[in-house]
Length: 278
Image (cartoon, rainbow, N blue to C red; front, side, top):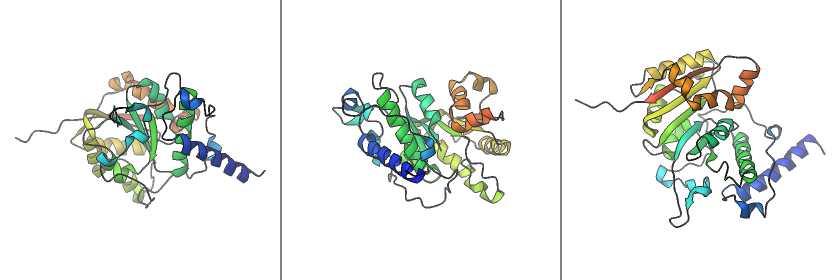
C-alpha cells in the first residue's frame, strides 16, 4: 500500500467517525457501540501553513448569532426539556491551529464553553477528530465536552456568531505574521477588527496575544494601545493569570518555539467600559 493510499484510507476512516460522532453526546451508551478512538496523527492531515483570509473559502456561517445552532457543537450541555444549551460560548481561540490551547483550557475552565475558530480545512478536521477521540477516552469524567471547533473566518464573520458582550476571553496565539508590508492588512489585529472584538467582548473581558515575532508583537501592542476600548494589563497581572501560563506552552507553535529556545512575547488587554457622553 502506497503512502497516498494509506493516507486516503486513514482519512476516510476518520471521516466516518466524524460523521457519526461529531454532533452526538458521547457518553457510556455511545461507547458501548463505538470503541475508544485513537488520537489523530497529524502527518495524515496535509495542509498549507497559511490561508488567505480575504479569499472566498465557501464557508457556512449564520446570518446572525440567533441563527447559530450551538447544540451541535456542545450536545452535553443541552437541556433535555427545553432542547436548548444551558450555557453560551464565552471563550474563543481565534486561529486555533491544532487545538492545543483549547485542550489545556478545557479542564482549567470546566464550566465554560470554549470555541476554536480555524480557517484551514484539514486542520479543522484534525481538531474535530482530536476532540472526538478525547471525548470517547474520557467519558467517565465527561472530559472535553466543553470545547469544540468550527471552520470560520473571524476577520469577516465574527459578529455573525457572537452577540454583543458575549465573550469573556479572546486568544490570538502565534498568528500569521504576514511579514511583507503590503500584507499587513491581513494581520488579525487591526484598528477596524479591534472594534469588532470590542463589540463581542464584555466589559472587563480580556484579549490575550502571544507571538515569537517581535515586529508583530509591537504591531499588536501599538494597535491595541491606540484603541479607546482597550487597556494593557501589567506584567505582574500576566504572571498571576493561569491563562497566560497555559497559553505560553499549550500550542504547537509555542512548543516549537520552546524547543528552539526562542522568545515569546505576551501582551494582554482588558476591555474598558464605553465612556459616558457628557
